[in-house]
Amino acid sequence: MSDATMSRTGGAQAPLAISAPVADGLMGSEVRDWITLLKPRVLSLVVYSGVAGLLVAPGVGEMPLVLALAAILCITVAAGAAGAINMWYDRDIDAVMRRTQKRPIPSGRISADGALAYGVLLAVGSVTLMGLATNWLAAAVLAGSILFYVVIYTMWLKRRTPQNIVIGGAAGAFPPLIGWVAVTGSVEALPLVLFAIIFMWTPPHFWALSLWAHQDYQRAGVPMLPVVAGARETRRQVVLYTVLLVPLTLVPWLMGFNSWAYGLAAAVLGANFLRHAWAVWRDAQDAAGVSQTQDMPAKRCFKYSISYLFLLLGALVVDRLWLVA
Amino acid sequence: MTAPLDRPMTKEERAVFDRRRRARNWAILAALMALVVLFFFISTARLLR
Image 1 (tube, rainbow over the protein chains, first blue to last red):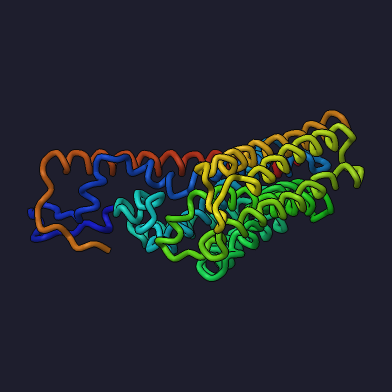
Image 2 (cartoon, rainbow over the protein chains, first blue to last red; image 1 turned 180 degrees about the vertical axis):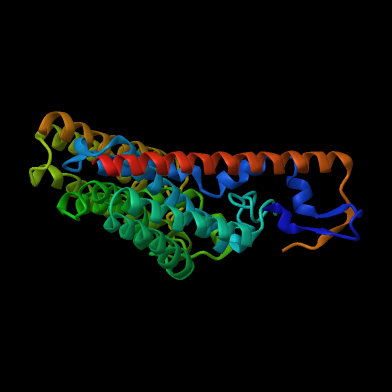
């Protein structure tokens, strides 16, 4: 779509004129840029949690493999589409943030209109395919997740409130719910608990990162919690949400969906998460809460939070498929 | 989006541009073929269900 930024300067025989950013980007692969628009690094968690929701749903064994794969593909593509539309909308702030200024739109390798069209096409395609392959409730929830991420998070909350991550985190919590609904055609308690777990996991995960990576947001005028409320309050919120998260992860066991083995795994993983969050709170800091250790505990907490969610969902699936069934 | 640069493409840039466009076209073809195959298998699975 970078053709959009090209224009002919003369008649039929005239050579093509190109914009400077396009000229800079010519050496890269265009296909890679289109894939970058889907935020592939974020997709790994989306796929993983979507597969987890699908695998723990009753009746997954009777579902044809191709339909299950189609459901996972739709969840993945829909998340990518939401990411592409997010990049289209945020192209102004992406251009001033060091972490994002090399993205395809701010660097001029892909036109903004092209990215928007691509995102909308993939969103409509994935929702339609989900409806045709599984059921229309799953398609509706999938559409809701895209709209939530694009409209509620990206367009409304992200630039207005430091609680953007809390409510926006719901967008990332949809995949297990969609995976479940794709199999069963109904919304039940366990997928809602999984939704709540990822919802509660997002703030400590992201705010641990934002403690040392908030300068970019400050430069772009995005009201992330450390920018607005300071590092000390952010540390407090990391602990608070982790304290709320850990008991929530025990609910599948307490409700009888999982065995004691899952409960034990959740408790051990949660205790370790609490230890990391506590280290973030107790990090050597000045009066404003700014770290004197280059935010080493926050970096460790962020890394652990990723492993934590992968291991927790893995334990839930293994326990449900092999120990409970 | 950005002002056009008032110079023609060099031969090398043209070659790279063509290569990028060719790669994109192949990628679109592959995606469409994959979609056709997927629709075939989804239809079959739903009919046999």
